[in-house]
Amino acid sequence: MIISEQKPLPEILKFLEGEQRIFLVGCKGCAEACYTGGEAQVMEMKQKLEEEGKTIVGHAVVDFLCDKALVKFRLKAHEAEINSADSLLVMTCGLGVQATSKVVDKVTHPACNTINVGGARGEWRGEERCLECGECLLDYTGGICPLTACTKGLINGPCGGAKNGKCEFEPETRDCGWHLIYERLKKLNRLDKMKTIISPKDYSKMQPPKNLRTTIMWALEKEEKEAVKK
Amino acid sequence: MNIAELAQNGKFVVTAEVGPPKGVEIEGMLEDAELMRGRVDGINATDQQSSVMRLGSLATCRLLKEKGLNPIFQVTCRDRNRIALQSDLLSAYVLGIENVLCLTGDFVALGDHPQAKPVFDLDSVSLLLAARELGQGRDLSGNELKGAPQFCLGAIVTPAADPLEPQLIKMEKKVKAGAQFFQTQAVYEPDKFEEFMKAVAYLNVPVLAGIVMLRSAAMARFMNKNVAGIYVPDNLIEEMDQAENKAQKSIEIAARLINEMKPFCQGVHIMAIGWEKKVPQVLDAAGL
Image (tube, rainbow over all chains, first blue to last red):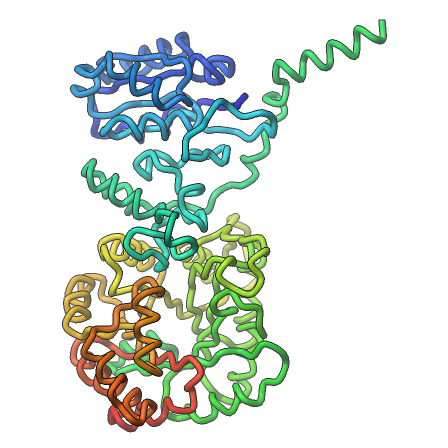
């Protein structure tokens, strides 16, 4: 399971500055289990954002957002709503945000931080990766993770090592992550995002908080031990 | 005077670089530096260039300083986290080093220890921020310092990158983060470089055009094929190809590029890559 936690509302509102019509995306997998992006949390978010004056043009809770083909299929049913939206707010792990970005030509904002739990990951088979850094940057980078798409994991823009959009490390096969981010932000007319100076990351956030280590599996294991004791 | 002050005073700034040796025999490197005395305004000490393990740039800078030369301390984010980087900046200051060039650094897999763990805890922009913070008496965590180091901060940019816009966006971020001068990746097309200089004029920061000495037509073709952000036009490759005396031709081309670009940039940075001893001849030929 991939553990996520919701970003503070002020951070989410900052992402949504200048945008009125928002489409919400949730996930019936890990995000529902973490109480960050299931149906209930999506409806809560709808209410919170409406209180802030936003218009929620629609929502979709997909099972699972880490299946790109399914995401495409499910969001297709909401095509008109999504087309009328300024942006999408995706209430899942970093993979869900990246999957949504891949299939929708709209700005996608992350509503959650993804936290490393060290255990089994989701069902993801795509090329995108989430580093579970606990400090999601996908808002600034057009829904493409700079930590994993860039060979060096740079967060403030490209180095000088790209040629024809490829990374000098593996020029035959590896795209320059920042070239992808640049092209995507340009397409979405949001190159202003790339001009933001991102402070050094807080790597302590990669450690899961103690309360989040109490996963269902962990609880079951503990339970079993106690049964033996009896 | 530091590099930014020289440029502010209207001096056409000339910098070159020395490559620290792989090992501890420093005589050759110091000879190279000695030949540049009085001819250049600053000498870069590269930081494990191309991710190849060598003598460090901090020690090299101190050696240059002891000889009365003006070192430019290259610092990359490849091998050190923010604790070590900030500490090395403090160390540089107490060793009398004023100019610092903040770089991201090459990826480790391209060097001679491809198994190494790449660090990149900071990047070129946040390293500049860190150095500026130290100058204001605070570290990156906001803790107060006993005595603040004052640096002249430099950064790099790749004017021949395609597309150029991402480089321009990052250059602006570097200026906002504290960069006071720029040295560029090699440029061989003065016309295009002039366009670049017009595009960055609003940043109002001195730019030293990068000159990489061509050694042969094959080297030029190799760079075109393999090195990102470098483009050597066909006419220069042909000139090198036909020249009988390659070294003489290389000096001639470098001097010509310098003179063609001099009217619209604030200086040049000469990367001789093994031909350091020829740097004075380039400057003679360029009339500098």
